Image (cartoon, rainbow, N blue to C red; front, top):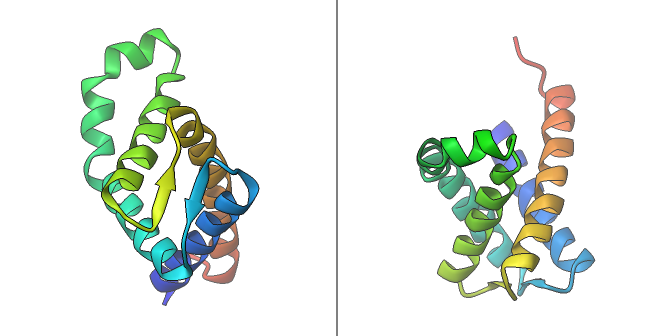
Amino acid sequence: MKIIARWLLLAAALLLVAYLYPGVSVTSFTSAMIAAFVLGLFNTLLRPILVLLTLPVTLITLGLFLFVINALMFYFAANVLSGFNVTGFTAALIGSLIYSLCGMVIDVAMERIFPSR
């Protein structure tokens, strides 16, 4: 139940990003659900590999390169899907920042609704 609720909230967050920033567009809630699923897959499977490969750059930039990795995940997801579009890398960077902030708020809310045992 918790996973499905989080997935639906992240899809709504993606619609919010598209509403707030014109560089990101989502055609429907179904497209947002698929995009949230693909973003979750990319962040689970690809992001750790990219973080490990770019560890020296991340250390030199004091962690700021992680924003670039997040933007790349956002941009890759938009390129794979048809109902989710990002106009460029800057739009992916800003969209991923807004999406990450929404994700943090959702995670806090989920912990309050479904407390860990």
